[in-house]
Image (cartoon, rainbow, N blue to C red; front, side, top):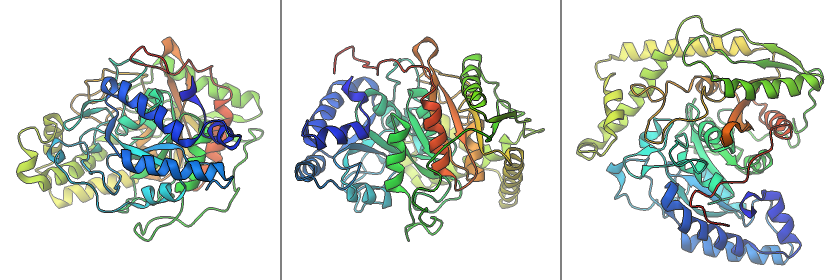
Length: 462
């Protein structure tokens, strides 16, 4: 299926004079027209901008002077990423009438500079505060592998668009797993980088922008363009040393296997089998594979849940009357309002509790070059649900959310395909080891079960 071509393969074809970026854009737009009504992955399109960018990329490839691996590649960005000309809605019905953005954020600026064709923005749930595709602005986003199932979230449309061939790369954001979770649900790949590695204002100690693609190499290519400092994000990190950590050899590596956090949902057998496949492959190649003792003796989630609720409630209050009457999903409003009676001291205590829990998590993983774990404890849940716990929409994000708190890089990639659905693993490493984590994920990708043909939820052909 041509929609499964890698970014490198596209470049090789164009370099050899077979096809051109404008032809690829036409194919992508055709699939969006045919498939998007079924899966609801696209929020807005920039047809004029994409057409102009494609023609410019055509000329560069024809003259043998492409800007780099992303030149001419159709890419999407999440609703929550600022982009000139397209609105920022944050998944909310309250923002449905929002005007187009006045300026590009650093992510979009870097994509444009690299020659990427930004097709448009992808859908997301309200406030980015559920790991699902349920949105008061966009309706229900659906998983292309089975439209009765959730694509995960909050970069829901990004994961669904990639799996369905509506783009060749995507950029999402991740505060508790929001690029890794939809990657797991949709059978694609995503990196939550070291916090600060990709500039994404306003500066945050737990929210990151993250590259997403169908293959690890695609994510690495996107990451190489996006990573680097920007004055708009004062927490962004200096540029990496080129080539540092690009190779991965399991021999002698200490690999930790984490399948039990000590609280929360237990991982399903299909998920554990995916983790075991990865661990066995690493052990067979000479890695020292060790089981990590559950990091938590007590449940650390309530404090983190209240911090997320406080963040959501602040945005809801900022909407004023626009937040009423369905302007925000009422289930999220009820969840967020549970913290309305908290004092400033209560919130500060929660921040301190979460910092202590993050230190405990980091200590439990210390000494391991690579950590392999589930991304989430199940392979799927219904598209209409906010998550596994109807009262706490992020309760099933334990395996992902603590890597946001510690700032460590983590990749989600599909490892097995039970019943034709992806069962993903998470590959993490120490802070600043993003390239090595990507290299480890690519090594494991080559040892995963063979991926089924990419889905077409309409039943049509490419």
